[in-house]
Image (cartoon, rainbow, N blue to C red; front, side, top):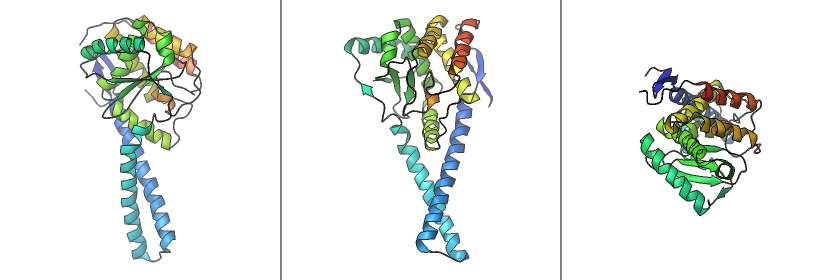
Length: 265
């Protein structure tokens, strides 16, 4: 595996995990500099410091305080990303359907059983949150609108983030994106690459490209959530993003045009 690409089921794909690591580092350094700078200014003004030695000591103290603030925020912040989502308890029939699909998908992907939570949005959508205990988030719209084979494709796609080791990194990037107001209305190249990679992984598991394509089509058709407490790109179908139709149409066409060699290694 090189630094720029990796092989998933025989396909050369962008190494989004490597890109995410770099993005985490950049955001942590930025957070540290901002927090440290604010600490230096506050201490200097609070104590009315002048002179080289007092200022130098204040700068060192500010650097340490900034590091501590960044560390604490990094631990606490990602876990609070979904705190304002409208969580609901799924109906018994939906819970049984989810559990049945997860048991098979977890075996195929070689990952432990993951928790699934439901949010009350009519839009067909999904996300993955958390670090130590990841949670797949799916909407009530997905449960209502998707056929079982389509729901399986959606869950497989989201579990792919666990398979690729992206969940913790994505949570960190998403949190600091939220802090720095980088959620935005445009997707970066790496966010698009990650979305396509996960789409393909979902198909590689379920063996049926039209199912994943149908999920994307229904997500776009049901788009009704202008903004949530999660950064736009964290969702299967990014919310609040401009020119989304062309992006989703391309993702769908890539799935349908791909010459799939299922089982390649």
